[in-house]
Image 1 (cartoon, rainbow, N blue to C red):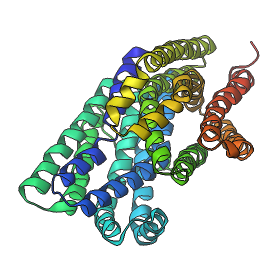
Image 2: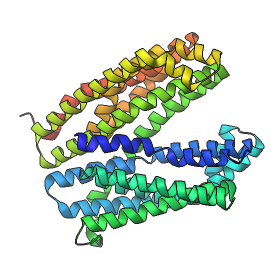
Image 3: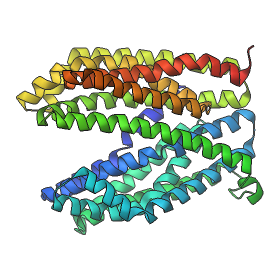
Image 4: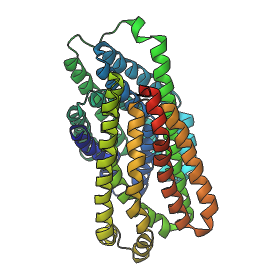
Amino acid sequence: MFAIAGPAMVANLTTPLIGIVATTAIGRLGEASLLGGVAMASVIFDCLFWLFGFLRMSTLAFTAQSLGAGETDEMRLVLVRGLLIAALAGAALIVLQLPLAALVFDAMGGSEAVSRAGRTYFAIRIWSAPLALANYVVLGWLVGQARARLALAMQIAINLVNVAATLLLVILFEAGIAGAAGAAVIAEGSGVMLGIVIARRLQPDGLSVPRQRLLDRDKLKRMLAVNRDIMIRTAALIAVFLFFNAQGARAGDVTLAANAVLNNFLLVSAFFLDGLANAAEQLCGHAIGARDRRAFTAATGLVIAWGFGFSLLVTAVLALFGPALIDLMTLSPPVRLAAREFLLFVTISPLLAVFAFGFDGIYIGATWARDMRNLMVASLALFLATWVALRDLGNTGLWIAFLVHYAARGGLQAARYPALVRASFGKN
């Protein structure tokens, strides 16, 4: 489990680096509008590519199931099908870039200078969409075979190329925001080339597949159905975070800043728990493919138990050092005071998040995507209902609603789990 979870945890830390590196390099130029533009566009791409994270999840699950079933040829077909879907989805984003840019930049409401800079970055980096989505597929394919170290090496390589290309284009050649966006395209393209090389090494017979088997109607329908359900599930999850941030912004600058500080603590626990979820996806998917109920339930127990252990550790650290960490992250006395006021909610959140993350990984590995979609939508509804009931409490009500969402995600999936195990393996 830790052979998969450990590299996945480190890989999660590298995920936002492309946007961070671009923001840092542009920040060195000293123009606030350029910095605001690249920061705004980076957030857009983070959300956009997060929405297409189903490519990594479904590829991982189908690869692990094929591995468990001993279907080595199907593993190659899963990779090529995933790359085909990534290419089509990425091409669609490029074709729709003008209305998409108009929609998101108008919604975000930045100044004219910031929006102009953001649109420049967006118009160039959008060409990385097919490449970024293809990298999702390759990473899922590698982790699905329990080759998490190779996946980590690939992500590190992408980020090293991005750093080098950004420094070269932005600092040395003074290409500005266009250079930062171009560096992202170069980095994602380098990742695809490296991924194809790795895949060919792991498949001695090459990556060519019979067209008839590649376009097998039943296999494609199942893959598309799973991708659709995971995408809807992810959209519901993104809606929670966007709503949370929007309500925080409406509460005023101090509350928004305090929530931003506390959200960084949530991200730290998420890095650990999502690594364990990656392990659950591979182990449970392998057990489903092998029709091994004992291995499946053992993997479930391991992921939940160790996840709870990590959660206790994070909770203890936040309880002991939370105020000091807040002071380290902000010098503003009002923000420090507000962050301390809501620190308790973040401190206990990992104890609820462990079940949400753990069962997400279990459901993805087993490809119980339809149930996961329905339960996530139900969790979103409970989040909104709680906020409506408690909105008079202001930011306190918002944080309570957020914790209810965590509890609902994990609790509903845990309640549904026994019936799905019986359906997948039989009563015995």
